[in-house]
Each structure stands twice: as C-alpha cells, then as structure tokens.
Image (cartoon, rainbow, N blue to C red; front, top):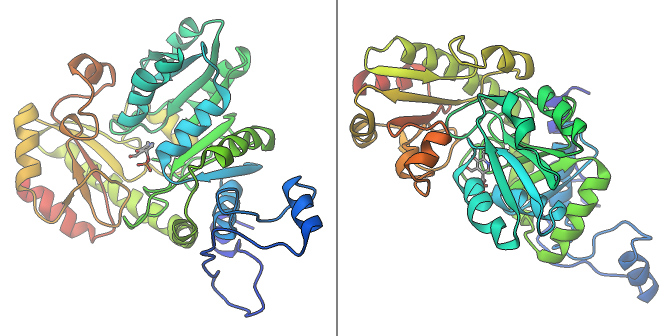
Length: 384
Ligand SMILES: Cc1ncc(COP(=O)(O)O)c(C=O)c1O
C-alpha cells in the first residue's frame, strides 16, 4: 500500500462493537484471567497490554503508523518531542560519553546538550551545519552519537543525510535525525542511512495545535533499549493524545502537500520584496543546500525563515503589527504562525551561540498554515 493509504488504513482490530473509527482506550491498566496469565505477561512470553505506562492500544496504533511511514521496524511514543529526544539520547549514553551535533538545533535540545547532559559528564561538540566536512575532526574516541535536525528550527538549514550516514558508519556512531520539520511525508531518513528518527508530533503531525507528543522510530533492537528505559521512567504518551495524533495522520499527506506548496509561493513572494534582506526556504534555488534538499525531500516544508531590513527593531515591529497570523511558539498548525526566535524559542542562547546557530537577531520564522494563500499574501504585502 502507498503511505497515504497506510496512514489512513492502519488501525487496531475492531472490538465486538464493530466500530469504524478506533475507540479511545482511556484505561490506566488491563486485567488478567488468572495468575498464570499475569506471570506470562510480565515475563513477556505473551505480548499484551499490562499497564498504560508500558503500552496502550491507542499509543500502539500511533507508533505502528509512524514506523510504517518512516520505513522503520518499530517505535516508542512520548508525551512530547523533548521527551523523545531526551529519552532516546540517555538510553544510549553513559557518563563520560560525547555527542557531535550541529549547532543549529531547536532551543531546548541545545539547552539539553549544553546545560543538562554535562551534569553526567556527557559533553557535546557542535559543528556548523553548513560545513559538514568539519564533522570528522570533532569526533573523539568517546563519541557515541551524531545528532542533527534537518531542516533545522528555526533557520531551515538542510544537511545531507546520506553523507552523515557514511560518517556515522565509518566511526561507529548512532545517527539520530530530528525529522520534525519534514514529517514522514517529506523525508524518510532511515532508508537514507539514519539509525533513529525522532518527531515532535506536536508540530505538523497533530497539525491543528491541540496536543503534544513525540515519537522515536528505528531498528527493533535500538527501540527495545529506549522502550525499556522509558517504560521504567514514565515519559509516556497519553492515550487521548495518541488517539488525536493517529487521526491527524490520516490527513497529514494532504496538509503537508498544500502547506508546502503555499510556502514555496510565499517564499518566492518574500524573495522579491524590497524590505526583505534574505529568505531561507529549502526549495528556493537560493538556499545554500538547495540541491541536497531536492535530493532528499519531497516538498520544501511549511516553514520559511526570513530577515527584514532593519534587523531586530524591524522584526519586532513586524510581529507587533501583523494581522491575522498567530504570534505563537508552535509551528505546523493550520493557522499561519509568526515567531521571533531571538526573543522566544532561542532566548536562552547568548549572542555568540545565536551566531553559531546561524541565527540573526532579526530573523522571523513563519509557519505557513492552510488559510487561503491570497489572504496570507495580502497580510504580508500590507505589513512588509
Ligand atoms: C525540531 C524540533 N524538535 C523538537 C521539538 C520539541 O518538541 P515538543 O515541543 O513536542 O517537546 C521542537 C519544538 O518546537 C522542534 O521544533
């Protein structure tokens, strides 16, 4: 079956009520026939639900769909994207280990690497995402993980996943890709050689700004490690959120295509505007990694980064005066959202860290929604 069909038709077996749509399993635990049933379930001789911190039917349906869409063997779902990132990393890292990551990454991931993992003597060396040839020189004997986001939040930088896979294999590293901006309908890092793929499902996967969620997929033996760690530490995705996210997947391919097509037209429009200094969008030929983007992405995604002439003040004025668009930290919603990263999502980064993350103080991130493109362009025309 094609992936858009799989996203619709993969569902739990029907119950005795023969429902068409998967019901919500709001239950914290499951019951056993007798002590033998319970014993064999706990020893995993039987594969079944025991307790919703371990597994729940709604969560399993969501994970199964993402694994199919990402061409992965298995997955684990989490309460948020950050829970997915944190739990995935610490499932494989020991005290004294080292990570190599691009410096252009989501603000909280950056904080995790620079502030929290060092508590366990786990250090990170950053490389410039636009200089992938420098990665090898950052790798040390104790390096275990190569971590990147592509496209990045908020600068929409892109990096060649096939190239990263070669390096990861050469140095025996685990290659982890945060695929949030692309979604499984734009880019599938596993067939390109990544070992684990993470999504913040809060973004385009939900796509309607309702629930938080995260998921990691990859080979079964890797997922087993993450599953055992998370089942004992409890960052579990709630069944209700899983139910919402699983339904959202039914329309994801349509939303991604429409939002990406609109974003490309808007990026082209912004590029021609005299008050815009620079526009970054993976499918604009002016993007520094345009050819790589074209070779590994089906669409350019729904996020555009642009810089207004007049820097920080012009950026702030745009946010303060713009109509219709939501001023919000989220992205991937049906509603167009504008953000000023330097004063919000990346406000914990100092000036040097912002520069290293390829972020200018006047950068605006716009997440294109599903409103009529004429209305989006009218708003931009009026306020730029
Ligand atoms: C690329 C990326 N990764 C991870 C996250 C974290 O996801 P969550 O907010 O669901 O914890 C975000 C959130 O914006 C993100 O943009």
